[in-house]
Image (cartoon, rainbow, N blue to C red):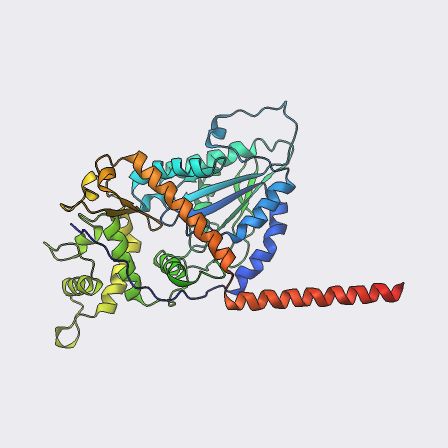
Length: 423
């Protein structure tokens, strides 16, 4: 069992914000004017990092323009339509945490409760396209919300989120669930980010009531952040293939993945399944890659292990299989029991939430303790985000903003001169 899990050294976060993302950001306010329901997809493995705060302003404006109609709750599925109520423009924002099958189930309910405590009024839904029940329940939720839109001939759904978060795959699944008979896949999907580059044509999700949807390009944050926080954010997104392939070397990603798997289960981390029998957990990435490379026969001249090749294999294993293996971990108290010296332990859920467990907390380590720790993680995330906004943007963004302000000043001066001449 691991008693100390050091944080790895990470490379500086790269910049990846291609032109089609900028174009969609400009189109978003106009798209929202003809949107009734927004499905905002986030990744269950990165429930905080996959938040795109650049959407927030446009979405809040959309809600205000619609009269700030409160978003519903999941029991909308059971609530009958009340025809006596006056008509109000439909305005629903549903936050879908996708790929729930890739995180340990013991953390889902505490996280749901933590969200409800921290952000009351949000409609959240945990889903996996590999679970027909999840797709069916989400389809039912959308259809029942659409039935409230009784004075409109149709209901329009817009799906937004970060790259490679599963938007197109989820829409294909909803279409298959909501339309009777065989339905061919309407949207192309890819394991790499950036497949969807434009807003899709309308896709029918339901015949009665009539519901259509739009798929949208994944939009990355223009600037991932300064220092360790920005570096870690970039590595997390690279691990889930949410950022362009080739911006990172494999070995730093393998080092961070090893760190996270150790945090999730310091007793029997998931990677032990791919190491030689009898191997013990390790925090040293070189040692780990050496053991893995030897088992896989990835040897070069002189019998030296090709660690880069082993690192690439490790990442692909985790994306294709290992995430599901690690998601099977339970929440035994032994994971956080203090050592003989009474030291504190680190534990976590997914790639975003990690916390310290004191010896006293370890004695009654249950879902209520986990929920409280998750709420503390959310508090820290909000504080860090606010501090980042105060600290400013990247140098490129600062120059761009200054240029835009200068052009606006020139336009005002020109307008004032023209107005004065007319008088």
